[in-house]
Image (tube, rainbow, N blue to C red):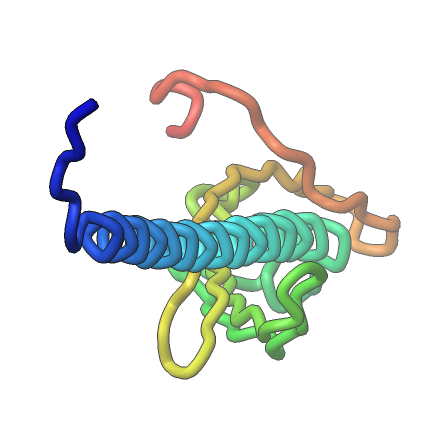
Length: 157
């Protein structure tokens, strides 16, 4: 039976296992950081999307006489008060723009963005075309505007 000289091989194996353990630790930490960032970004996107939809619905539901008095081609921009998001609890800044296209057609644009430490995490924009029936009787109760689906350019003029 021959005996091989294995002096120092245990130290080499221990160093290799230590390096492997360190690499696994770095990889695990990196994956955890990426997962946390991804979850935060997804939450911010959901918050921005929900506030954008809420602002569009509120604009149609709480239509005011000031919007009816806009001249054709004129617009009105509003900055809504920041609201805390539902998932991230970060403030969601929302801006609303209403443009009058014709006597009874309006364009409502909304932009919502979630910010943290002067960094925009998510931004969502939407535009909706609304039709508001123009009544001849000014004493009648006017209904809120309703969204228009697809239309041809001939219907706008």
